[in-house]
Image (cartoon, rainbow, N blue to C red; front, top):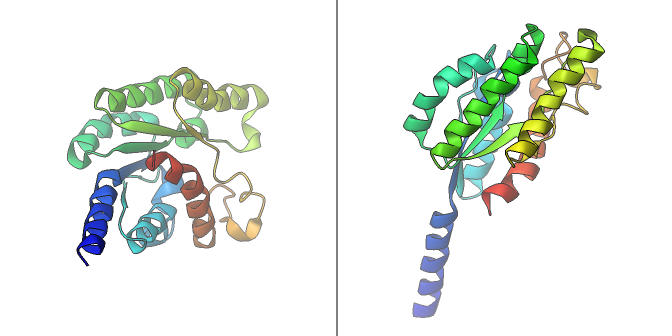
Length: 201
């Protein structure tokens, strides 16, 4: 009995040491656009972690319409308030939709990565893609931001999580940009497969 009790205590202590807090900083793709917040993929992932024993915790600080500049302004307070172990950045889409210079988007993302690093917070960058009607040159410059920045700063790059969802009209709203509630579990599972091994390192 004593040996079993010791083993259980050791497992609990180990789980506690490994527990990670992930802060998601995104826009409408992560905020649950036109749906209750608890149906968004971050909420579903956080709930899944809690149901699995609460090893990890997810905080969703995403806001619909958010730009990299707006997030950069909010980030210091968020990091101080939540003190996450990991920061997942899903931003840039609204910069692109508004035609912001890709160099500005890149600069803002780099500042956020550096800010987190200086506080000992590990980061994950998310690849963002734009609709094809923005012109080949702009699309190329914009979409290159993410792999180049991830490579330069040695950060994991989460592939665009709508890449095989946007082609399925039944999973997308009429605007062709935002996923429906039915797509959120699929996104949750994609993100989980990428993120969970990182959090367990």
